[in-house]
Image 1 (cartoon, rainbow, N blue to C red):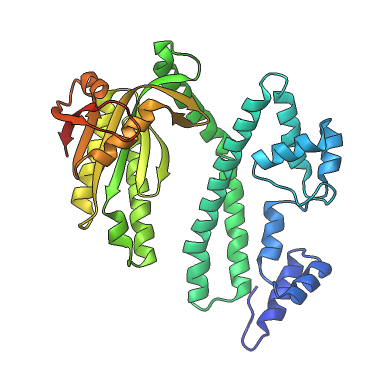
Image 2 (image 1 turned 90 degrees about the vertical axis):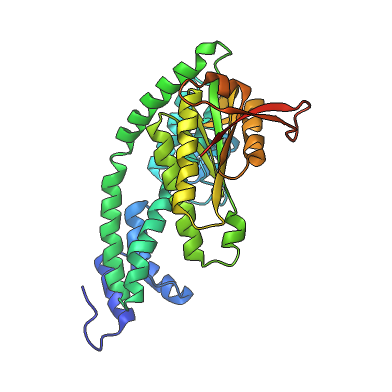
Length: 354
């Protein structure tokens, strides 16, 4: 539906909203508050109107209000209060599943899983939102497009999102099998259920802060996204896993020294070949038992790898003794001992140039 020449764009939007089933009350409230926008129609397609309060949800699932509030907070769905309608029936079903899980798993592990789930889903939601804003909304409005046209594009995007969400279970199964295989291999050392023997790697973009201090925000974002893309693809190809991006630094894991070096060296060479000076890369790898929980890793090995990357010269990869000894395809040279912050004794290191 278009506005037509001379048509009032506000009234055209109102007519479109009515066609989409938005109530007169909602339209009137939006007019009053100055928020008459296409999302009034499209948001309802994404999430049903909440009709259930925390109090009612607690009674429904047989748990206390405090338990429901704690679980919702872990999932990233903090309700405004206990009595206002803030949940949908489907969201109460999520709580019911968590109650069932409590018959098998501890409260601590369920809450940790819920936080991870909420965080992961939030990342997917933000990526979808950013994709629409960058490729649909901004070009449409820049070209002078009307709000009705934008609303129709939002509706099409929501339909595509619905289709994509239908594939999440498929992707979860694929990633779960991959995660199980990697963890089984890393846990063969027998250190315990939450101990994994892994190579932990950090690669840092040295010079990033100075190079981007006065840079155009779009250029800064493009560089950050390029680094994240190359890091994810590179680590995945060697059978490793990106644990997290930390600004201009990536933390990843691999099952052995060679594969850790493979990933780190590709990233160092990419920075040298593709990025403008002064931005270059340096890396650090450490091997040993790490504490694994919730998709993250902790312990002295992680700390050592994080300190090694800070000690590494630009364009070089510093390895600890265990990583160097574990390599059969990469031949590092001794690089002396380094006093790493937080460690009581000097750390022997080996170096690999990019």
